Length: 119
Image (cartoon, rainbow, N blue to C red; front, top):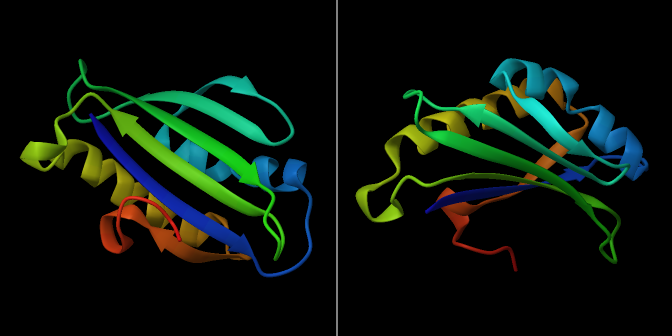
């Protein structure tokens, strides 16, 4: 199972609800269908390059000592042992959309670059 995680830190004070709302352009860019949303959590479904490869997208606002962070997770059933190429392509697209749509958030962690879990 493929799982890619990224953590974004707000550059200024904000609320969990504002962080979740700011994801709208990213969701549109990924053509994601939201199936659950709260003020601090969002889950959505999207399809990768092949129709049968369904991916799940999760966004969670986590409280940290230095302030809230936004965790974005992309998961699929594609095997990581084989590189999860389709999921990796969608993850790269997600990162590019986040950089454009969420300029007030700073990228602080990427699981494909920094390891499985943030420190």
